[in-house]
Image 1 (cartoon, rainbow, N blue to C red):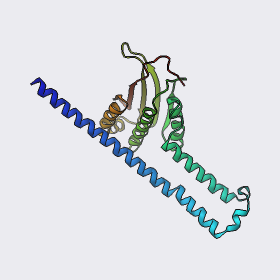
Image 2 (image 1 turned 180 degrees about the vertical axis):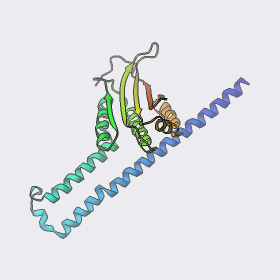
Image 3 (image 1 turned 45 degrees about the vertical axis):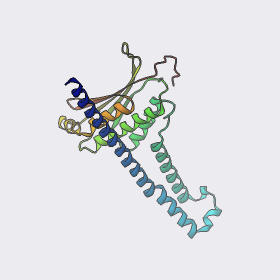
Image 4 (image 1 turned 120 degrees about the vertical axis):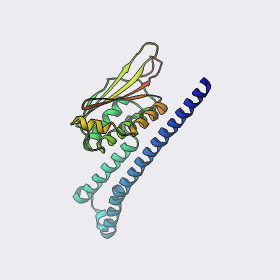
Length: 237
């Protein structure tokens, strides 16, 4: 009986893991489709317009851009769109520093209309695998997109990154996200989505690590935990 119970548990665990990974892959696919749509409706449209204007007015090429404010504005707009696209696809500091990557993301998020962000980041941090940093940023973005699309979104977001050293476990990284909602009802509604359980399981497998969520009145607290490099002399940035 014990063996049957273990086999059933393993089968259920495998099914839940596959379901979470499939869900995460679908979320990433949808995100890439949205990015492609933004490219088609943004930079590509602007390049097409600029090309048509050049074809219709070839004298434009004989003058420097500084003497053509309309062209200068279009070039500046196009450059900004490409910079944002590049940062979305490959965030800054992805390979060098998790705190700097979080800071850069927060600056861009505030420009995009994200609620007020409060950051508490350490001055130094162990060098992390690029894939893990990318995963943390991707899940953070998805988490905030999901909370904002669920009706009454959070009015403030606080991020705290810390390093812990529990006994016999070694050094672990802890990213805590506190979402403050305008009402208790809004916090309850935001926490009912079934996708949050899938996100937690996907992080546990891919990081690997542990993701927990709890609600305290009008606040929802997420916490991502993962093991850092066991080498205390590993480089820090």
